[in-house]
Image (tube, rainbow, N blue to C red; front, side, top):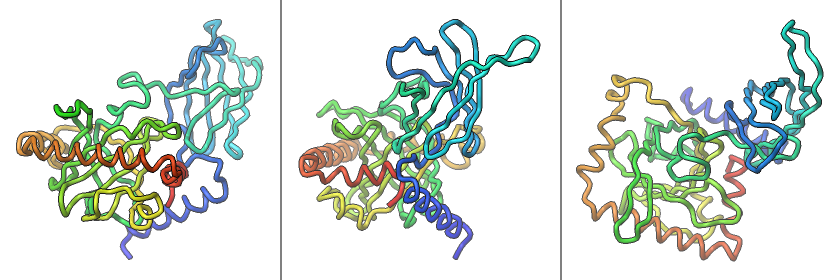
Length: 312
């Protein structure tokens, strides 16, 4: 067994044990960053959050323009934080207790007020949140679509002129497949859930992915050559591969050119006939219709439940 497969196996085993032992918890820790309330509130203006392993440190900007801070550990998805105010002489004054809770979808709340990391560029639950460079962190079993590279590139928006439907398009690092993602059908159960297709014909693959925060993605991808059809969740899961991906930053022109990041997307859009892009869009629209039809029968809830738990 290669080192990569060994570490992937250990990761997935740990993830499986974690989710089974604490199914109420998210597969991902809250992302570090600046949070705002997802509803009007006079309790605070914003919160800086830093997560290190199972410990949370917060600094809260209050409505009276003062800052308070505190730290605690998560226990069963809950952290009770004693907040303090620091005086100019570095002495501290207790300023109440805040309770932070994280659910199995990665949603964070403070004192029962939902908070979300501020997405200052694209907003929340938006297809454009997929734009960027993603690295596959783990998969089980390893899907051939990623081969040995482990990279997905999702970088430009494409609007099909026939349906006026938006799709985020890019390609894998192997420069062989176009990948297109579109927002999943309007589902009462799934924010930030997307469906997609890679390649065409015998190389087609079907993706379902869910974003956690701004920089984590988990999903399932069908095997190569599988019919692009959603029959039911159990049949899809029986042959699909689970994967987790993280967002990468553009870390320099030289490395980007070496990996093909800069030229790949341009090649896709200049060398791909419009008809092929339309076919990709049509496949995604067809999948959307199939999934919508499956919802009344509850066939889609099993899949999203497994996505939310982050394991197969």
